[in-house]
Length: 471
Ligand SMILES: Cc1cc2nc3c(=O)[nH]c(=O)nc-3n(C[C@H](O)[C@H](O)[C@H](O)COP(=O)(O)OP(=O)(O)OC[C@H]3O[C@@H](n4cnc5c(N)ncnc54)[C@H](O)[C@@H]3O)c2cc1C
Ligand code: SF4
Image 1 (cartoon, rainbow, N blue to C red):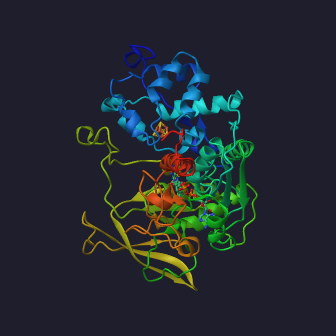
Image 2: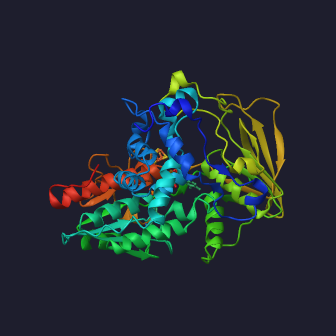
Image 3: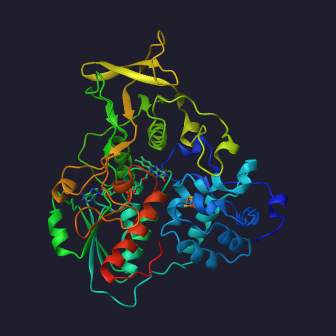
């Protein structure tokens, strides 16, 4: 344990944001790192609980009290080794994870959990700055070949673990660069993309070969991978967006969030794209959907110079504070306000959009109604909202079935995800495994990393009979 009285002596402090007017002028990250002295004090607040609930809150089971102690003792290098023993990419989770660990922290019973995510990010960044993260090149090669489809966090974690186990790993990615939603969904202001490039070059040195523009099931036959490799891991994400099939859906100016966000990420990294540009500049923007993707649409619209931004959520407004005695240490239902919400959006809850209408084929108006707790329209509560751009951010229903999944004929679960359990990660097709959003449905970066790691171990056991990879 760091400092026995740390949690009594030091108040929780966390990273602050650059002022709104300043950060809206660019797409770079705007979270201000804590100075080293403050990080050590924050790590000293960890009580090293007999039962560290934060371990179970964290999907990759990061050994949080151990590295808090090491940071307090100023042994950042051992802290980085420990952190990387459970998490391949802590520089990603230290930026974009919603930190279920902090909800599970015992100090959260008093609303002041240890700033776990900030400390994790600082350890990862320091490890890179100091050149402690050397590529982990395997001493012995197994002669086995594995194909990984998709280079999101699940595919990257699986590929890195398998390469470190000595297998020849090839990643097939339909886009021009690696990262999946880390690269093309999550905006640069939350995660700058040079962080992904840095990991990709580490993985290349470890022996992973990346094939870009390789759309399996479209430009590359899925069966060729099954025939040419000893195992195949499907990590293609959950890319089918939930639609809103109401009158006027076909009007210009109504788009899925994932038609809008990747364009801006590509603009920032100067990657060309063919589609007609979708821009919020000078427009009245309405975002339908109250989650993370919706928040990212708000932050991106604000940076593009939207005239106004309204976010609509069909569910009622959650309570401001969690009912700790009912929920702790689990993830609670409470109102979550992201940095993007502070950048100029109005939020409306319990609102259903019944129809879009427009002029000359372009959207102009949303016709809405308020709904009760059972999502039944409240009589007489209809209202209209003006809009030039409507972004649908209502989540994703399942992976794309056409192409790769149809060609392979893998069995799907009742929700339409690829069917496999979390012991073997094996699909119904011999030699074919699956991990991440493609298996579990739309989720989080940290869950994708966990699944990629666990699937890698399952593949290694399948190929070698035993595996020394961690689960
Ligand atoms: C806008 C947005 C913001 C988000 N923000 C956060 C956040 O802040 N924090 C968080 O934890 N989670 C967030 N998420 C969720 C998180 O990004 C995903 O849960 C996670 O990326 C899933 O990882 P994955 O590797 O399973 O799939 P993905 O990241 O979706 O990667 C799948 C990859 O497979 C490729 N692919 C698919 N099919 C094929 C094929 N047939 N051939 C070749 N390549 C293929 C895709 O191009 C893609 O690169 C967000 C999601 C979105 C959409
Ligand atoms: S990965 Fe997420 S849950 Fe795990 S320690 Fe980091 S911030 Fe917490």
